[in-house]
Image (cartoon, rainbow, N blue to C red; front, side):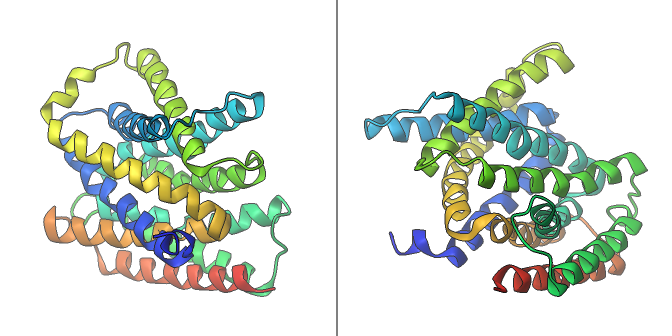
Length: 295
């Protein structure tokens, strides 16, 4: 098991697959009239509380230094609360599969932001990957969601901002990682902070904390919470083993799960141009991967 926890490939596939499951879960939650804020709260509160129980069982506790608190809340906002609400908001308008494709742009935007922040030096492959990835995004955006369900431009803009926000989170977590911090502790603290931010957001935006909505799908709530806890434990380990750009490639696995589940189990249909755009993005991811490995 320890060997698997040091394997970047295993961590990438496992984390991406579990992330992909949140897409059909999110669409089902929306169909049951559970608000995006509340389902994002389920993801973060479920993960945070389960991980807290794990830490306490091992007599380990969260650190509350100024650095740790800063990390918890900034990572919570840009890595979990905001992108999850964005994803869950656009899924009913664009489809789980289409929304999942936005995850595949995360490696491209992460590499671009890493170059801007001085974490990576630009090279030919990296620039090529960025250009090809954005070309693929343009092709996907032209199709505007599921076949026969053309979305308003607003939802496309929100969807295209998802990989940008994820890239900010990927880079932030790397440059501000507390020294010698435990990944499980950071995952726990960040998700508890995200849950708190989401409660405040619901009270401000919706005027209430509609937890009663969750009674529409209690078993799905439990499953989502358990999947989230495991996913984010592996997620933070992948951050250490693979770095921010490699970690961002889990979005490609998530997109595949989203497209397959959306097409096979949720009745979603997409134009050939959508699939072609996804393949072009995959080519961009290939180039960014090569750039990441280049010395």
